[in-house]
Length: 279
Ligand code: FE
Ligand code: FE
Ligand code: ZN
Image 1 (cartoon, rainbow, N blue to C red):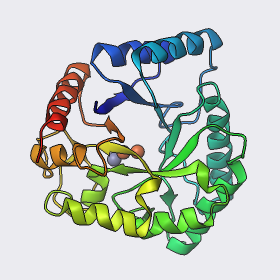
Image 2: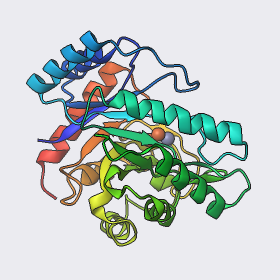
Image 3: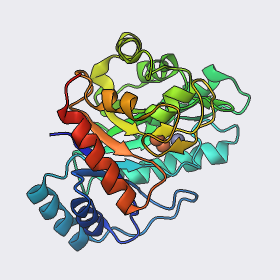
C-alpha cells in the first residue's frame, strides 16, 4: 500500500497526531518538533508517547517524520546562530529517542554570501557534532529550491555534505517535489532522468522520504511556494507518476500542500488511487 500522510500540528501531542492521521486515512505524518519560527519546545509527556506508540503499532503508522524549525541556519555567518542551530537540533535528536526508528528532516541552510563551500563545511561539521552512533533516528537533508543563498538546490551540494559526514548510516535525503521543480529538475517532463540523476549523484539508497507538493511557479523559478496537488505547474498527472514510479513507490510521502484536514484527506485518497494505477 502507498505510505502517505501530511504535515500535522503537534500542539496537542503525539497521540492526537496519530488519531488525526487515522481519521484522514493517512498511515504516516510529519510534524514540527517545536515552534517552527522559534526554538521553544514543549516537554515530552511519556504517557502521551506511550499511547501514541500503541496506536502507531495497531494502525501501522510508521515511520513518522519530524521537521526542524526552518528559522535555524547551520551555516549562518553568525557563530551564535550556528550554535543555536546545532544545540536545537541536538536536543531534537534526543527527543526523537522517545520514538525510535523514525526520521528528522532539516533545511541545510543559507550560506548568506560566505559561498557554497563554506556553507557545506559548516553543515557537515554540525552534523558530525550532533550525530551519535547510539541514536535511532536518520537525519534527512531536504532538497531545496535554491532561492537566495540556500544550499541544497543541487543534488551535488547534498552529496558533498553527505561525503563529509562520518556516521553515514544516520544520514539520508528528503526530496521535496516543489523544491526540486523550482530548482530546475523537470519531474513533469523527464521524471526518469531526474530519478537517474539523483541516483548517479547521491544514490537512491539515501532517499528516505518525499515531500509531495505541487508548485505555484514554473520550472526553475527558485521560489518555493507550494500549491495543492493538481493546482500548480507540476500537475496531478506528473505527481501521480512520482508516487507510482518503480524506484519511489515504496517510500513514505508527505503532503505539505496549503490545505486544512479535509483537503489533505482528499489528496491522500487521490494519491492512493493514482498509486494503484499502472503507467
Ligand atoms: Fe521543509
Ligand atoms: Fe518540504
Ligand atoms: Zn517549501
